[in-house]
Image (cartoon, rainbow, N blue to C red; front, side, top):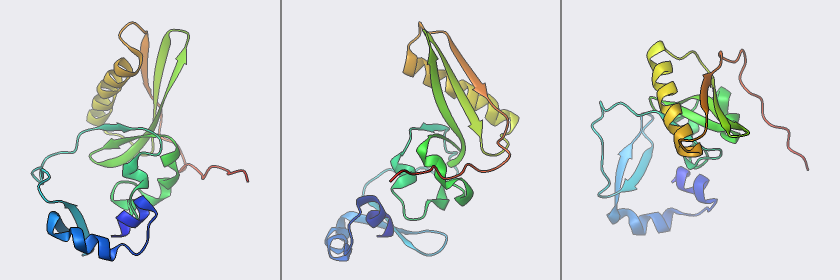
Length: 159
């Protein structure tokens, strides 16, 4: 229920969740906490590798959970303000597309070292993202930078 409260901003959810419980499937995470899902939702084989995913800024996966450490290292928690890249289900990089005239460049900034195989897969998926985002006619470039030497800092918020 902690994730539901984090996502919705609502409190005192227990009565509503209990009414829905017959239509929900319950699981336990590695710490023994209850996780809820729709009753008939598909479940992949546990050995199925998680595909690469380019997520936009403020994606629900990163902001809709009370405990985000299932997908992002606590040191990098502020990258939710940027596009993020999941490798094997875990945030491993940030990304941004910059347009100059009719050209577009996708810059991927790893948070940790990517394996050679992952770099190739990331570049290939990056090409598909650029094609989707810019169309086939635009000159496109995918750049993977060196690993940042320190975790990103929290943005300064103005009041």
